[in-house]
Length: 465
Image: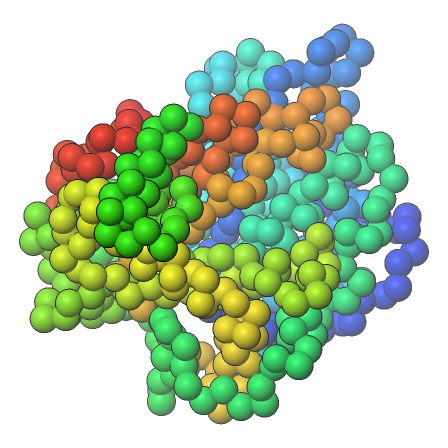
């Protein structure tokens, strides 16, 4: 079927104060390349399809999206680059690029998420592409997919969900809650950590480093082809994992405590490390050397809840605020597929998380990323890790806040297809079934070893491709 397209521009309904025309990105916005964050949601058709047709659904989505774009100027705007290499969020009437909105009616029933459900499949987004793109698909069975893609440099997942939840509330006909919309679009996270920000932050916090020259590309190991596998953890299997590791930990050090998330991260890191070791995957530039005793694990974590006054969360900051924290973990513990070793890995993760996500540590990373010594000229900060973890489990990707007016999603994903670097993991959680899905990647040579990992298979089930 033909894919219809149009561009949705901001409405002129709310008469909000005009945003600044340009806002410079903070260093935390520039940690990564302009990749996309994807959110694919799948809905049953409206209960009475005779009175609410698909065309009416699409029209309501367009109108409500236009209103949401008015209330979130950065999403409707564009990215600008000045002569000094500084990237800006450009907003307002002069820069409103709008949102590409695609509609497709398929002649086949819904069979799960697929690559063509998404509005775009670029690995690296061209600067001229719109910040947000949306595709609405109707399957022959009536199922409706609403897929959204946001340029990651404009915001992290928390900011993206704040926008999507606003769009959904408008589509439901609810009054706008202005207290959950930023009143300041500046990329200045330090204003929420007053008294903790330092004028100078010369020491690079792990996993970052400041280079003398411009960083021209990713580390060599990140460019190696990888294979993604997905694993399902039931509520009971996660409870059993935490119990087994906690019991082992009690025998070693009764004063230590780990969370379920710590246990899960420990299991994932161990499985990836063992798969690489068993397959003799080369340790390329960017990974720890063979002679070293530890592996480095970097994990993205939303830092809004770490603001001392609690005034950053709840939609009050739009941008990227995932101050990567780093854990240095014993390689021998990672390679040993026992609960005793995994429990020590979990403690190392808990210790690093507690230390590096303290308000003081988060404030230092803010300071580091706005210190002119590190940021001028731009593009000199890099970071490396053996493994990269992203945990989305706290976010309810198909909850009632994402009901677009005819019921909440029955399924939601972070998109299908795409490429991921080796040693990467993305964790998502279904808040209804209490099942957790973990995407894990390893280099091609290590995938069979990963699938056969004894400790991983004790608690998780491989999801067929």
